[in-house]
Length: 192
Ligand code: AMP
Image (cartoon, rainbow, N blue to C red; front, side):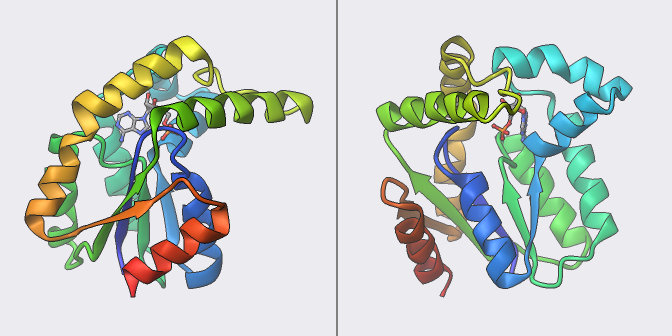
């Protein structure tokens, strides 16, 4: 089963992806994680995207599509892929459809995690505080200014994907406001 987790920053995509990985032997493909890894290992691409990411803007479609293509070609997901934070634009969504078709795969579901803005800000500020308290690095884009840009990027560039996947018959919307376990069981229900 190949699925997309769709939702604004702080909606819980990463947390829910991790649960699916543990329970269903799926493979999480987070473009955010891939980009952060490229930055910390100091690759050319990492240097190019650093500034854009810190400000909260989206990096180019070309870069993230390239990253996803590499991972899909490497394979190895017995239980299928979970796309987390990808696609984020209509061009990325089209590219994903084409890539999957090229590889003889298909998309089984798009789970939209619905959360309101106030909760998102609280979760992200909380995530930054927790990391700082535990002596862990705080994401450079987990601050109020970048968060505003990230939310705007979501509404302008990513939220049109809700209509796109609805029209394709793939969309399932889940309430992302509850406890982690509640959201997780709602996702399981949606996946069948
Ligand atoms: P995330 O960890 O998913 O919140 O992503 C962190 C940052 O990485 C985003 O704010 C973007 O700058 C960049 N990024 C991650 N995924 C994508 C994507 N699919 N398209 C464009 N930029 C992305």
